[in-house]
Image (cartoon, rainbow, N blue to C red; front, side, top):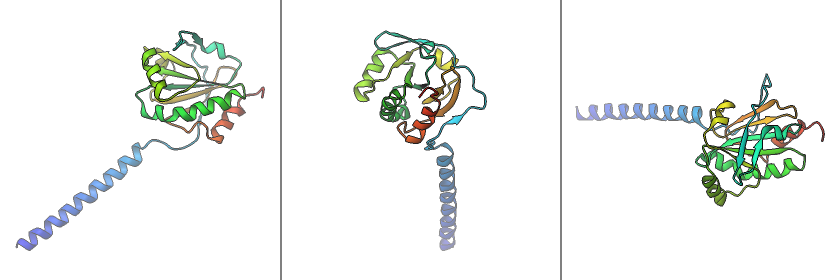
Length: 184
């Protein structure tokens, strides 16, 4: 009788382990961050909402300052690990894009000057980092997830969307952005 009970416990334990492994695999594949190196092309190309934000030096930047240029707008936060992870490749992309007269800016959601300066000690970047301290611009742009990037054409329309971390210096991504630049 004791042998039968042990066999029953082994089968039960094996059944539970199988359920746990399957549930874990489903959750990992469902919620794992995307590693796809692509953008989502929007079917409609809405106009990007205007903003006026300060950078960490106190200089004001308006979206309209970039009218006539292709621009990449990245929403990020210093506490967001995928945001932090993509910043070095974003810096390399900003340098390459600048050679093609394309701008890249970061909008720090909920960030203060102090938090961004502290972030820059760990992750040095040289493209403009603007402060959306009250998250109003994030809300106006209907951004739900960080990081989120939007690529805007010369007429001020949002063409591409990237939700989640990317390797921004990937030649495929850079060429997609450069192709929007009609003057170069």
